[in-house]
Image 1: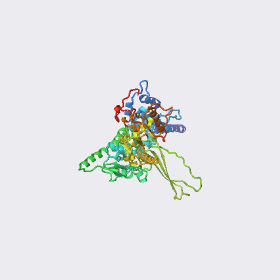
Image 2 (image 1 turned 30 degrees about the horizontal axis):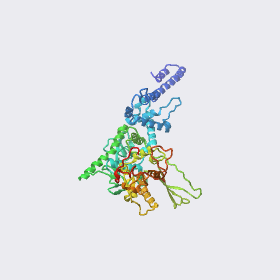
Image 3 (image 1 turned 120 degrees about the horizontal axis):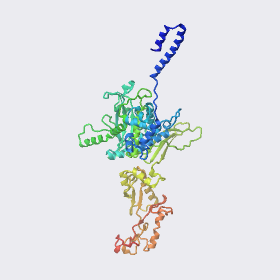
Image 4 (image 1 turned 60 degrees about the horizontal axis):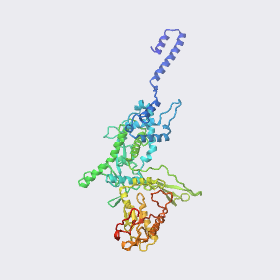
Length: 625
């Protein structure tokens, strides 16, 4: 019997005084009973979780272990985390050093927080398997709310740390790498990548947004991802979440893919093909895209053999972006499963640029780029500098104003460039302008502070096969020019006997000629200087011949018939190259400052003492000379 019914029965059988006292007592008891009944269903039950034990278990399983190492080896770690252990630990260390939320702390009870490696593991597992946040409660001792926070903060942290390196737009150096790679891999010179879109089902899309993300051929609302991928799976353009009827054309019209061209900040993508200059590189697309000059599509109905072959090559190369979508969804299953969460857009009208889904897609793209770079499967993309600091001296006059009109950054093959346009007119009248271009060099092979073997390795890694072959070629001065040196990457020029700039050429004429050739070489893609050789004869060279009988021939190149005099004349080499310092490493050639030249003796030891006195015949000498 409840307290309220007991109170009613008691009122009918007791005296007035006793009724009043006992009634108040029963009312208080009934109120407490009702309060407990109301709060019993709404109060959240506390679940004791031992996060310290879970942390130690995680370390023993994958990271530290005992004498035999962790329980699971590196191969198992790679399978379950989708990343090599070294790359995962680098990400954990970078995030923990940068973001306070991932750093270890204690709450008011003195209880230690989750370690950064636990939070990152939770986020990685949600991304790679696509399971609900509470799926790892038993192993990581982490509630669903904390797991969701781990995923959100982890995605934000990865984007902030690595977006500028792996989700940046291609620079001039990247464009050259992309076009060279696609030209050699697909036989499509000038190709920048493959452009396409893919859908991601959004099952729990809010009702007010379903009309913007619903398509007739999909049972549920879906969000489209537009991406450009290269043959090494570098996704350098990703546009996600555009509302609308969701076809490739509508997404393209909202995409920022060509914004840098309209703003005049795009790198140079021009290329030569069949002796014709094309102003822009191109993208491979399917038939739905418009007929723009930057889009190359396959023939719809090919009839000629060339058309059939081109269609096969184009469709095969266009698989790059589809392969990138497949790798993206297979490595991070959260992108291939229907999204059950609700994304709260900033304006609640379907603009998802700052939503959680957009950040997860960017984060997965970043990790794909980081994984390729860690394994060496991708192209050698140089890092994008975050900040460039430079001194600026301003006029102190009160009527002088400095107004920055334009800032343009680009990564060049020889380093980088930062261009400014200033309005330096009094009071900013706009009639006096100054343009400033700051150049800097970040290439290892051009850094004299780097070890020699590091510079050589860096240069060889950047050279194409054509450049390596051209550097081993020596052409005659008569067929050389600055354009030839720049276009064909020629490594050396020779002035043979009688090959001179002009009859009775002055030293100034020689200097101007060589500098012209050198400027062409320095203007090539890698800026490798050329070597200029001169075949000096008739006493102008360091000749080793000791001619003692005119019948031996070639006596015109001998200093003397006395070996002592010939030996003394070889000191000319040290005068041309500089004296070898005492600290120089033995066996390593030494060359002095830039005002010196490389010299060598000619022709060979014993020349002039040939067998039987025959011109250019062999010379036979004993081992002791």
